[in-house]
Image 1 (cartoon, rainbow, N blue to C red):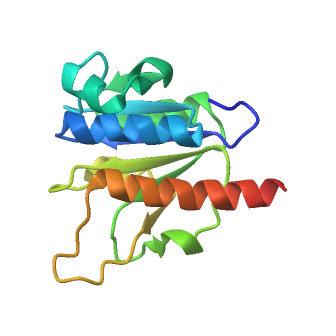
Image 2 (cartoon, helix red, strand yellow):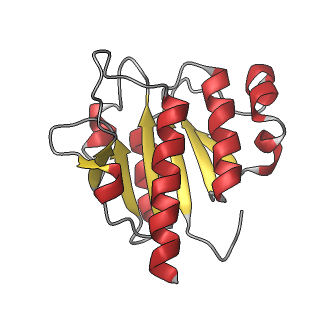
Length: 162
């Protein structure tokens, strides 16, 4: 993690795929994220399939786990006063990801591709951001979504500092 950069935490709520989780570890390392929090049944290091996709970042990106995303969010709020927690979820009131005014420290919550983020966790988020879904399927892979949102947030946070 780059200590001079924005503080970004990634909360993974019940991701099923170790490959998606490993991909998000690589993204976390690339953007200098502070940590990844694995919740529910999300694969967490050490895990052989996650390690294969993470390509060593599972050893360099700090991670921890919580039984639920709700518990993770409550712990983050206690540990980091003023942290902004954003759901990445296509809710009716979600702001398009590139329109949102991100702040550091921040956390993004990514949910299960089929089930989304748990209601308990959503209720604790400060806002939600989403990517527009213009196709018939209206769905992209959680790792691809994470990449888009993380780089949009990073770009905005870096511009705010300069």
